[in-house]
Amino acid sequence: MLRIPLARTLAALVLLPHLLPACAPPGPAAWQKAGATDATVAADTAQCRTVAQQQAQRLYPYGSSNPALGGAGMIAAQQQARTDRGSAELEAFNDCMESRGYTRTQKPAT
Image 1 (cartoon, helix red, strand yellow):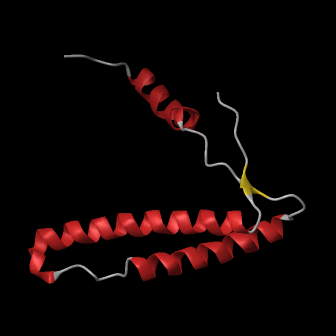
Image 2 (image 1 turned 135 degrees about the vertical axis):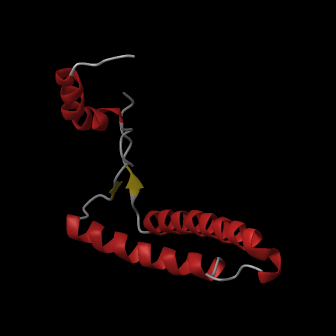
């Protein structure tokens, strides 16, 4: 049986939460617009998010699956609709921000 000393186990448990963020990929690039203040970016982001959510719900309404599919089929259809809705929302949000003159900053490759 493999025996790991208690001190080593405790050290690993203490260090692990501090090491995991270093393994995470960089976050998404930020939206930027020349002359826009933080408040303007926040307001435009909120407005575009609302518009995108509304548009995605119109395209892929909740509860639009076919009851004739049975339980498993309905779950699969709902999951697909959720995926489609999420993709449509992201595309609509990006389009909205770009139409307002924003661009994404490019993060340097590491």
